[in-house]
Image (tube, rainbow, N blue to C red; front, side, top):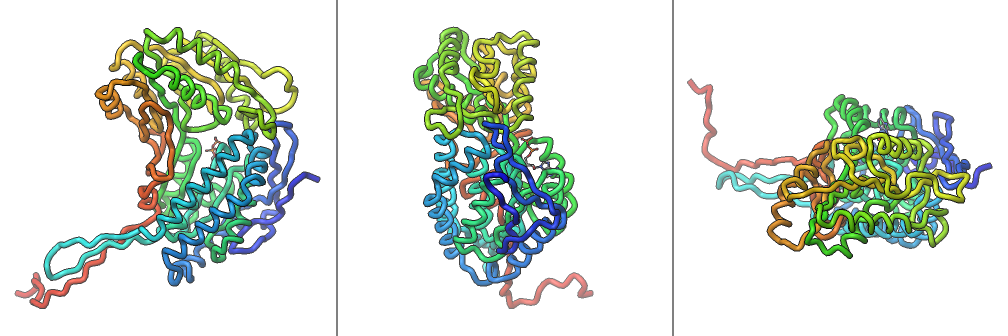
Length: 492
Ligand code: ADP
């Protein structure tokens, strides 16, 4: 018997046994034990969930419920998350391995996001376009319809709000598939959407494997949009499957973000931010500053100090309030991180700190914060997303070189720079190929700020009113009130 059992899927406002007859066994990454069993959705279950969402789109959710009422439902959901924050955080810490201090802040952030989108619901408007005096032309922003939300395992709680917030504010129905590694908090979320009072079928929660449930959603002819966060390899597959009915797509696919420290930076602040943004969440975030570019004059000192800070990070059990970072979420991710550490050594990068399993843990997917210096920007250590606590530090001489190195990567999600020179700040911000550039801070995400990637890092944008645009179709309506006879090309 596992500690938690969720035998049913949440479809059409009901808790239903999966037609697949299967369960996902979810592993606690700190102990390597199966701690929860969750119903697994197969093809047939996805069909049912999509049908439920479709029928919700044909009912009062579309025809009767006002934008303000959608906002109220989202406010209610936000307040329920706030009420249950401690329980949700603990659940996520068990399932994902993140320490409580991170999961608590993640739930709080999810509340902020839902609150923003609750407020946005009744501010979604079209415009009137003056094409000629004798016509009224206007646009309506209509929901795209049924949205398949496919989530990764690294920040489930936060991403529920990134996906559900704009989708529901804009009046869509959602079929949400959490990652197979972290399905548990999604089941708790499903209960809260029911309690909040969303009509049946507006939110459906169907845990499942990517190549089964995920692929079924992506290829489903009745799904209008996929909103996906995960690897770009999967995004490519989804894009192919989604081509069946030209689905609308929002992809957020990770990065290898450059964090540039110029010699005139506020070093003390930059050190704190560079350390947290390289190692937080055990390196399992797409927005990490995993490539640290440091100007030559301050390079040796900055490197020593960040390595010392990395060495002081407390790796520990997720439920221990003192823990800074927990284990990696899965055995596969741990193996991947270890393989990159080996690659780094083989490629001749200088291992300054970490590189191994921390002492005192004979179980669990734990790994030390690791810093490599003098990394070649063309090496795999600097080019590929590791998703572990492994920092590549690279020296540079000039501003031009920093920009060239920063952009010399296939990704473009986040970039940051530290300088006191305001002209340089604007120059470099304009030159960086990245969806988000922060100056004298790093990876500032906020519900009001559009977020997404250039290049392989994604497609479309999440957050801000920009996200709403990606969850609506524009319909143009033209009402001609001319009384003169229309031009008739077939007259003679
Ligand atoms: P990671 O490599 O970090 O696990 P993935 O991109 O494989 O990231 O997974 C992110 C999400 O995409 C998960 O919910 C996973 O189940 C889903 N997924 C994986 N493969 C597919 C697929 N072929 N079609 C749709 N979704 C998929």
